[in-house]
Image 1 (cartoon, one colour):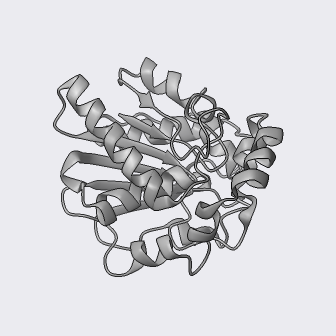
Image 2: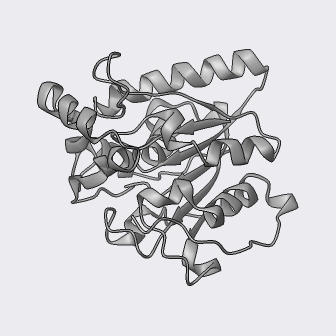
Image 3: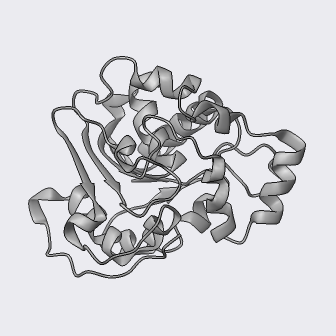
Length: 238
């Protein structure tokens, strides 16, 4: 399994909760910090989506070679969710992927550049600001409404044959709005709000990766033949 972090974050930080949870469920979970403008600063996802997607595919190949698995599952959050959908279609590696679980991906673009607040939650804001001042954020322009990466993803069908997709969003997301823009309205894709299962969970965009409710939804999406009843929790309302 490959875990893809959000814009302005990094792999270990973004998955400090969900990674160990999935490992305890029996999954071999691998993550990386993709899209770093400089290796000296642990802030990822800011370079071009095209550049990051090539790096992600190379990492997927390494995981497959290391584990011997023919295919990987991908769990992506925010920009990582976008990448989990973008790569199989645009880079054409759907044959290497079994399942995709995307948490609040800006599938159809977002008008709010605050996606870098993933870095805020992880305590990386000074480093994020340093990266943005020095190197800019090509990815920010590519995943806004009408951005080049969004246009490439949404031209024609998004879902690829042989890949099972689940998109999980929150009705309280303040960054990817309208909330339904995360969803892939195509046959064979499961789209769900956290609040469809747990109406009182106030989790926001960033909090999706740190929410016990979402962790259970992700586990059920990864193993639909052995789902468990979700015990509602409360995620960070950020």
